[in-house]
Amino acid sequence: MIKFFRRIHNPKHIKEMKIKTNKSNLKYPLKMLSLFVFMLYSTLTLSQIKDYSEEVTKKADKIEQKVIDWRHDIHQNPELGNREFRTAALVAKHLESLGIDVQTKVGVTGVVGILKGDKPGPVVALRADMDALPVEEKNDLAFASKVKTMYNGNETSVMHACGHDGHVAILMGVAEILSEMKSNLKGTVKFIFQPAEEGAPKGEEGGADLMTKEGVLENPKVDVIFGLHMDALNEVGKILYRPAGIMASVNDMKITVKGKPSHGAYPWAGIDPIVVSAQIITSLQTIVSRNVTLTNNAAVVTIGAINGGNRSNVIPEQVEMLGTIRTLTNEDEAYVLKRIREIAELTAQAAGATATVELPYSMRFPVTFNNEKLTKMMLPTLEKTAGKENVILIPAETGAEDFSYFAQKVPGLYFLVGATTIGRDKKTVGDHHTPQFLMDDSSFKIGVNAMCNLVFDYMELNSK
Image (cartoon, rainbow, N blue to C red; front, side, top):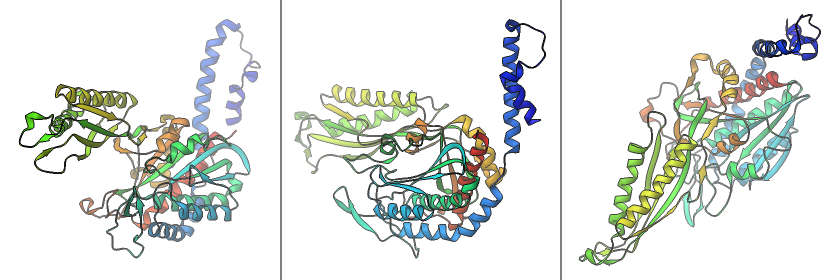
């Protein structure tokens, strides 16, 4: 049957069919027939591709402890963005030991591995982020981080408080399995170990944006990219996904309000930037509550820091505010940024002050967008990996991810993997970016399985 569909879908074989009609009245029906046959043929091939998931599971079981050990080691030795020297060396050494072609210092400290399968086919990229956060760990673990380093001119503790150590360990495991199954690969796998997902240090470039600028998706040209994130607020065994926008765009901002200083006892002699800043902060909240269509998409405008003045009886000359903005569509992003500028500048002007808005101030990530066609195509793979009942469609999140830069260039699929112990009260779970962030060691294997299965199934579905 497959041979038959292939035959009639080929235009040269359509000519051989003895249909008594002329070209003009045959043209449209043949197009429709061709489309119908192509769709049916595609459906049939989906059910008939070779399934490597059992072999992958066996190999993942075999190296599970190795993946856990890598994660413990990386967790105990965390490094901030653009400073992942030890982590990058560990990754590069492992990839080289597998016979994978390795490029280092991509996007400052990034590592890229290229594994060519024994058969021709598409190029599939897999991404893991490597950086930690300036957070002091407060977990009672044998491998807890005690690392301190300099950050923005100050000494700080460092912790993997977002699961990137797990992402690196998972992708190292995936590289080992796929290299062992190289003869079954119908295409090429590009392993992208990315620095500075949490943002590069002030004054530096980094992350997915810089790697993209340096051509990480070229030579060979990537067809699709997959990425995952461990999720400490969902149980081990769960996979969470969403087509289209899954995570928000993020812009940070700095608003500087300048007034006129005066004695605190004579405020009428000056222009109080603290009062003006308070008015701006209050008015900014009306953007979300009154300007954004919340029934369609969420949005966030948060002021996280405000600094101005140093005495109770002195009205200062200026106040500085730092904040973050999250939106879930490009249109909402443009509109919210416009409203922030209008509110800050005109509120200050009305009071006789000035407001300078730096937006973005030091970072911007676009919306993390899952290609809808790719998501639909690969959903059966995720369901096969975790069980259909454990693959959950989720609402969009207002967290952000610079995987979005990759997914702007090529079709991408980004999903979450549950990482908290089964049965644990979610109220007691340490959230991401907190000193109590924690992941269950048993959570990583499903990530290994998912990434391997996505590679094999995509290649089987899309190889020539």
